[in-house]
Image 1 (cartoon, rainbow, N blue to C red):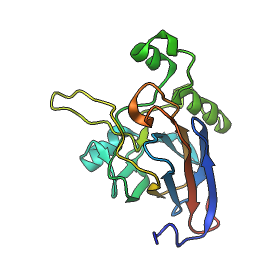
Image 2 (tube, rainbow, N blue to C red; image 1 turned 45 degrees about the horizontal axis):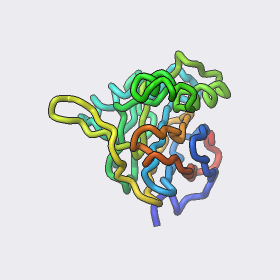
Image 3 (cartoon, helix red, strand yellow; image 1 turned 120 degrees about the vertical axis):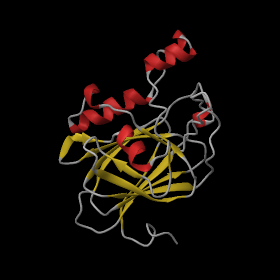
Image 4 (spheres, rainbow, N blue to C red; image 1 turned 90 degrees about the horizontal axis):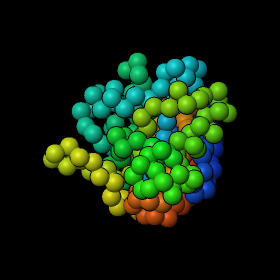
Length: 212
């Protein structure tokens, strides 16, 4: 039994394929993201729930941990170099925070103009963020849970087949009250979702009385 499984369940939702999701996870509560079918990228943004000007910073996070990839022990830092969430359990082994989120513009550039109408993570973030008063200027570089983005010796990036599998999970502990935005990635033009987006599960556990 995991530490998260032993705690009271405050929220337990399945996010359909291609859909957005959001919630406030209170300080000391745990957010478990479960890849239900396997090989599904989960794009994620974090904000201080009381001051959204404080938000996830990929550069601060990479500098603080000295690694390009996220796994157990990684502290997700804000643009003020304060901790937002910590990865306390990871049974996948590696997650990306440099590949960014897909958008209509990037799809068109990479895969052709015929992909312009396809749904993308940026659109999910904008739709879900609007519920919390966030707009396009509030979108920053994001975490891609379960996405496999190797870095070659010459610095080039690749998006390749995932290393996840059905039922794998990553567990995050909130270090403060955190607004979590998720896009269950709708990308069908590269292997990040195995060309077939699938549902994921979001579970919040921990002490009652927090912000969730």
